[in-house]
Amino acid sequence: MKVTIKDVAKEAGVSTSTVSRVLSDSSKISFDTKEKVNKAIKKLKYKPNIIARSLVNNKTKTLGIVFNNEAGDSFSNPFFVQAMKGISIYAQEKGYYILYVFSKNEEDKLKNIKDFSSNGMVDGIILLKAEKNDKAINYLLEKEFPFVVIGRPEESSLVLWVDNDNFSATYNITNKLINKGYKSIAFISANKEWNVSKDRLSGYKEALKNNGIKINTDIILHRKAFNEVEGFKSIEKIFKKRSIEAILATDDLLAFGANEFLKKNNIKNIAIVGFNNTPLAKYQNPSISSIDINAIELGYGAAKLLICKLENKILNCNNYIVETKFVERDSFRKANDCTIIKKEDINRIIK
View 1 (cartoon, rainbow, N blue to C red):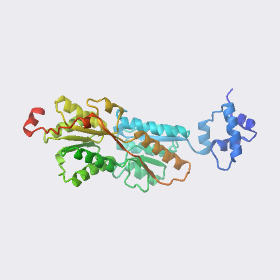
View 2 (view 1 turned 180 degrees about the vertical axis):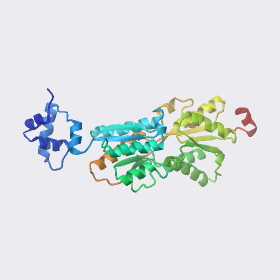
View 3 (view 1 turned 90 degrees about the horizontal axis):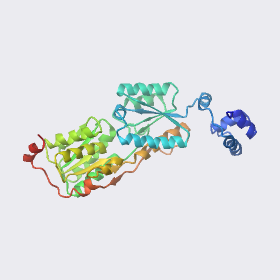
């Protein structure tokens, strides 16, 4: 027979309303009473009815995650998988569920956010990116609906968010490449309207500037998406115009595609560095050096900020900055001879 809230109340010697308040972690219930009720719950192996509790408390204990179309093509980009893992870990710790939806385009994304924030299905929303004039963020701010962003938003003081210091991470790795002897460093990225892409480009440019290296727009490319195909096409396009010594990709998948182009055309001694330190990076040939952005921690921090807000806990800050770490592998260590492909050889390579 299924254990009910009445059975718990009888076992603990309290009213059903007291059990309900304990389940809601009410501050009006004493520690001793909570302990007594929780012991009864554990003894009887009581499982509260989530739907019934949500109707009473006007809370669903559910977080909504809105995937943009770049993530929805498939879960091919490990960043989203890792971020989801971090979100799930913290949500589970706090007894929250996750409901997610994929968006076909920006219009569809905004519609999904409006549905989430008005139909009572979720208590708060997690957004997986921030961009210039972000309609989703502006809408949620106007609606005063709880949400958090993975990525630095423009109105950073008004929004809960979690991110890396993308400017510093890119500045530092560009400096590291320059100190190793590379001067002609290609920069490949995607989705240039995203703030993460802007911050990484700024860090790259600032490092070149501070080292007295002229910024060459011919070797800076923003593609449509963070994937291997776009990485391949980026370096193919760059080699039609210029020779390079190193490649800085703002995502490992772009770096994988760039590496595939180099191997296909038997081009050696070009350093490659990616971002995200995805699990497959170490299995590439050569193994790909990468900036570990701690995507799991980004997701964990986002869920923590949002749930703390939902539970009216005092927040000392409105954001978390997650540290990055450079993971050096063969694509950095073995590219010692800064061999530059001569202009007359470019047509031979790119037919």
